[in-house]
Structure formats: C-alpha cells, structure tokens
Image (cartoon, rainbow, N blue to C red; front, top):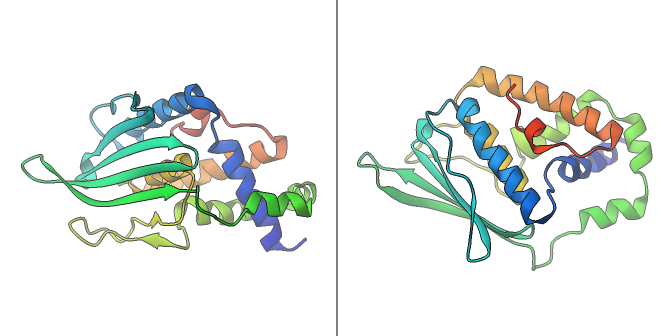
Length: 216
C-alpha cells in the first residue's frame, strides 16, 4: 500500500476518533472542554462562557484577545454549522470579518464510503508510522493545503485557517492551534498530538475530549 492511501485511511481515523462526538450531550461536553482548554493554551485571562442551546443550535462566543479577534459559532448538526470571525475594535465593539459556513446537505465527495469500499484500513494501520501521522495532522490542523491568511485588520502570516473543513469540531480545533500566539507551545502541541493519535489509531479507541484538549 502506497503512502497516499495509508494517509487517506489515517485522515479518516483521526477525524473519527478525535472529532466526532455523538449526540448533543457529548457535543456540549466536547465544546465545554474545548473552551476551558483555551485559557491556558492561548494564555488568556478568563475562561470563555460555556456553550448553550439557542433555537436548537449549540452556540458560544470566544474572545481571542491576544489576536483582537472574537469567534462566534453555531452548530446545527455535524453537517451544518457556521463560525463568525469578528475583529475587536479599540472601543471594544466588534466588526464582522468573515463567516465560515458549511452545509453538507449539498453533495460532497463520500471519502468514508470510498475508503470503506476499498477495505484497506487494516493494512494501513499495520504499515503507518509517526511520519504518516505527522503528515496527516499537518494537512488537517497545522498547515492545511487550502487555507486563508488574515491580511487586515490582523496581519500575521503564521495563521493559516483551513478553508475546506466541513467538520465543526475539527474546524474549531484547528483554530485552537492556529490562533495560539506562542510558537514553542504550538510545536509542543504538534508533538503531543502525533503521539496521541498514533496510540488511538493503533488501539482503535475514541479520544476523550479532556485528553484531546490537554495542555502540551
């Protein structure tokens, strides 16, 4: 099995084991752990408010004060969500920069069905290495191939926000990494996640949200 096919199976496994909480209760728990993790990982002063249910959606607002940025997300389901990026103006008002909007009620390529049909996961798991995991996490989180840079009013070329991510939990998690202002902490997080997902895939075990959000 060649490297690209191994990485394709690992890509799906990482999403399945780390970013697919099932049911509203598990999703709220995942998002609560996510918000709590940001205080130490981003080194901000307070914990973001806990996510809540509004009009049938899970919603929350997160201030990333070191970036003069506010994130507001609303998750209808695993296939429909949006994240608003708002710039925090000097007078503490907020101005919308852009919205990441996903609605998979429209057709997208059925990656999971394609890989399941090929029935090669067992071979991929036997042959993968840490380097495969590092490559896949790079494409999912650290440096997505299709990405956006914020040029104005926030100018930091190191922020690479994935533009084609259709899983709400994966999208928020890559923002956790991308918006961290500390390079050493980002590097430590990369190393931690390679080890974490290597073990999870070898054991085919779901990663608890508290473990996924642990500090590097």
